[in-house]
Length: 318
Image 1: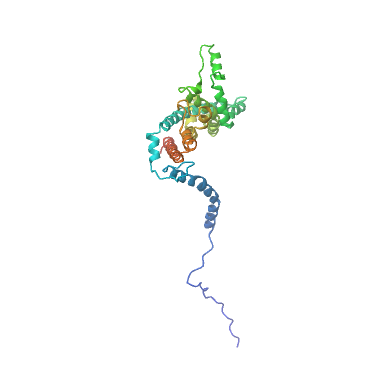
Image 2 (image 1 turned 120 degrees about the vertical axis):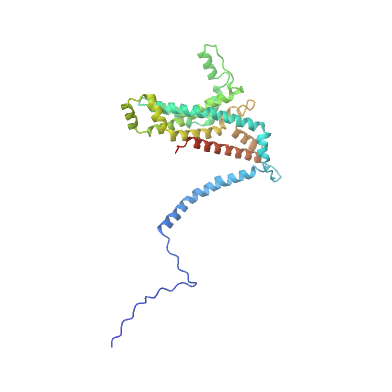
C-alpha cells in the first residue's frame, strides 16, 4: 500500500517571542520622507548654527550688562537696556529719526528712478546694452570704494562744487556738503540712490519682459495711448515686482552703515548717525555688548514690522 505524500506545512509562521510582529519594510512614501529629511539636514544645521543660536544669544545678552572685555560675569538687568535706548540715549533716538528719513527719501527715489531707467533700456534702440552696463556698473563696485570717491566729490573744492560754479557762471557756490549738518544726510541719499538704482533697474526690467507682447498689441489695436497702456497694463502687471522692489529697498535703506562710516563717521553733530552705526559704535567701539544687542533686537523688530506692513498693504485683494 502506497502511503500518501506528506502535506505541506500551511501553519502560520511562528511569531517572535512576546507576540510582536516584525516591522514591515518602509513604504515608498517613508523612503521619500526620510530622503527629504536627510537632504534638508545640512541646511537646517547651518540655519540653527548661524541664525537661531546667534539670535538666541543676542536676545539673552540684550537683558544683561555684558561688556566685550570685562573681568566680571554679565548680570541680568531685565529691560534696562531697552528703557535706556528710548528714554536716555539721545544718540539712538537721533539715529532712529535719521534712518527713517533716509529710508523715506531713498525708497521712492531709487524705486521710481529704477523703473524709469528700465523703461528706457527696454526700448528697441541701438546701444541699449551699453546703457544697461553703464547703469549697472555702480552696483558691482564696492560700497567702500564708491563712498571714498564721493567723499572727494563732495569736498568744498571738489568736482561737484566746481560743476555748480561753472554751470551758474560763478553765481552759485557750493558748500562742504558732508560737513554741513543740513546737507550731509541728503548728500548720502544722493550717493546711495546713484549706487543702487542699477540693481532695481534690472529687477524692473525682468518684470517688464515677463509681460506678454500680445497684451500691448491688443491695446494698440484698440487705440489705447502710451500713457493709458502704462497706467492700466504695465503698472498692474508689475505689482509682484513692485512688492519685491519695495521690500528690498526698505530693508537695505534701514541697514545704512558703510556710507556713514566712511564718509561722515556719524557727524556732523550726529546728523548722519543711523541705527546700525549706533549698534556698531555702542557694541564694539564702546564695548557695551549687552546694550548693543538690545539695539540689534530693536532694529530686527522694526525691519520685521515694516516688511509685514508692506506685504499687507501690497497684497492682492480678495
